[in-house]
Image (cartoon, rainbow, N blue to C red; front, side):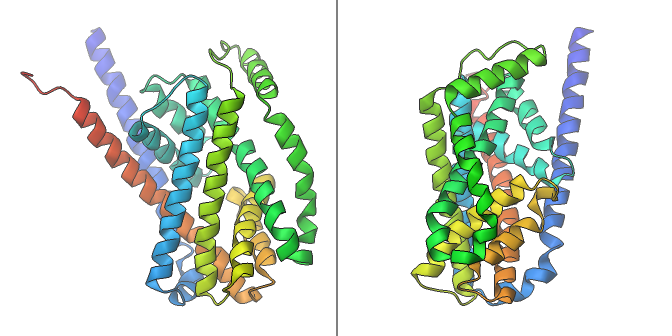
Length: 316
């Protein structure tokens, strides 16, 4: 009877996960298709070489984001093999296309549980990625935009006020205290291993690598739309970082819709007129969505192959 119950529970879990994946993929494909008309003209001006390079840069940025999360999870006590980490992170990230903010973390908690990662640890690593992204992204914007964009981004200067708060809040002593308090309030056992300074620094390094790759992806799009040279290249790094950070902070807009585009157009104003800048912003969002789908598919296949390789052959 217990074997039968276990089999039924396993079937239910697989059904739920398949349903989640189908819904997330559906919303992800819709996110790409729904913007196609708006960006078709912009894409028509891009060469296949620039477009391919932009997609490759986004894939590199998404991989850096996964490595940042993996470094946090390892520091908290759950190191994962690369194929396993990629599957949990990228398939879970598809949940952001489903209406509602908690789908990605719920998916990562469930997928990680199969690999022996306690759910509170998965949740802690997931939520820590956002202040890390914010702190490093604001830093990139501060380094690149004031000297290159000037007054076009002055109205977003208030974002700089968050940087010292984020840096202080990411100190391991502060993070561990907040995590401990949250787990006590939820009546959960404390984390077995606290976050360390080394873990935070390693994760921050991966975050900066991700911002660099995102900057390259936007610079290629901007170049295809007519803005070339060192200034356009440098502005692309700050424009993408500023747009992402504002889209995250202004929670009133789902997934930063609208807010990111406004910020990116403002940051690119010194090198692109409004029309091409809007096209660049929309093309960027579409390429990033396409990258999410590619990474999730590739990670799922890689994890399945790795799992098949670990299954012993009968008779061996």
